[in-house]
Every structure is written in structure tokens, then in C-alpha cells.
Image 1 (tube, rainbow, N blue to C red):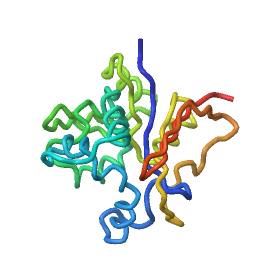
Image 2: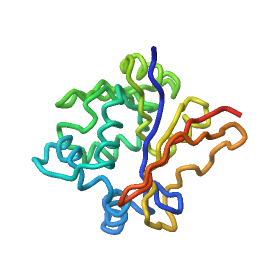
Image 3: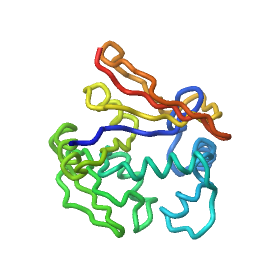
Amino acid sequence: MAGKVFFSVSMSLDGFIAPVGRMGDPDWIAQWMELQAWVLPLRFLRENLKLGEGGEEGPDNDIARATFERTGASVMGKRMFELGEKSWPEDAPFHTPVFVVTHEKHDPWERKGGTTFHFVNDGIERALSRAREAAGDRDVRIAGGGATILEYLNAGLVDEFSVALSPVLFGAGTRLFEGIDARRVALLPIGSQATKRVTHLTYAVLKR
């Protein structure tokens, strides 16, 4: 049986998943670190990025680990790939096949640790089909960025999603649901868990 299609993001209290400005600028980095403050201390993150022993355990760590373990393949947009290409380590943190939605032809890019980036230039549905095949019984994660998540949501191709709602305010930036077709998408709450740093909210996505 095929797994689910999902996404999982951190979001500011006022609805942004990335700060305004250019990735890598000091102000951008400072806000990004605030948004991701819940995940940075985790044991799972240290293990996945091979940063050594230590790190926090607990509910946040369990959620981060479960998200990773359920993922058999990922899909992302070209912009997210290009930004990440400059900052991901050689042993990229996905450890699964990743399908990049693009308009260009590009040979697969294999990294250490089981991550291979495949470039798909014939649409989001084809990228998802290939990801489903690669994932087998596990789930497919729409990794981002925001525009790619929105495309999949509006196309009715997402089964569920989780938001780690961080107690920070951005005022501007990339809104998760900017441009959502609310006439076609309905949500069913299926889980919530408050921790000391964030509130994790999970929704099933239904068609109206």
C-alpha cells in the first residue's frame, strides 16, 4: 500500500515559514534561528548531521525523528534545492531519494549517505509519481519551499501536514498559505501537542 503525501514545517505565530530578505544575510539568519529554535538542540538533529553525541531528548525529539523515519522520498522545488545546495553538507540530511521539480534537464546528483537528487522537468504530478515509487510503503514528504507546497496543496495531492507553531513574530516573509485555493481545500484536525518551545499541529487535508 502506498504511503501518504505530507509536509512538515516550522511556522511563526503570524503565519510565515521563512523571514523576509535573502537567505544567508545576518538578519535573515537571526530570524531563521528563532523560528527553528525548537529543533536546533535536539539529539536527532545532531545524529542526522553527524555533529557528535549529546542533544536533547523528549517530545520534540521524538516528533523530529518520527518525521524523518516515515519519509521514504522527498519532493522539493528548484529554488529550495539551489539554496540548499550551497549549505547542505556533503552527507546531505535526507538519506533518501529527492525529486526536484524544475524546468531544466539535469543528471542525478548523488551524495553520501543515501541521498540522490533527481531532477524532474515534466510537472509536479510526475515528480510525485516517481517519489511514490521510490518511497514504496513509506511516505513522501513535500520538503518545500512554500511555493511548491502550495502547488501540491492546490492540486489536491497532499494527504496531511504538520506545523510546528513557534512563538515568534516575523511581520513579513514567506506565508505558508498565501494563494491557497480555500474553495477546494478543507482541513480536519488530527493531532496537537504543546511542548516547551512550540505547538505541533497536524491536519488531514480533505477535498471540499
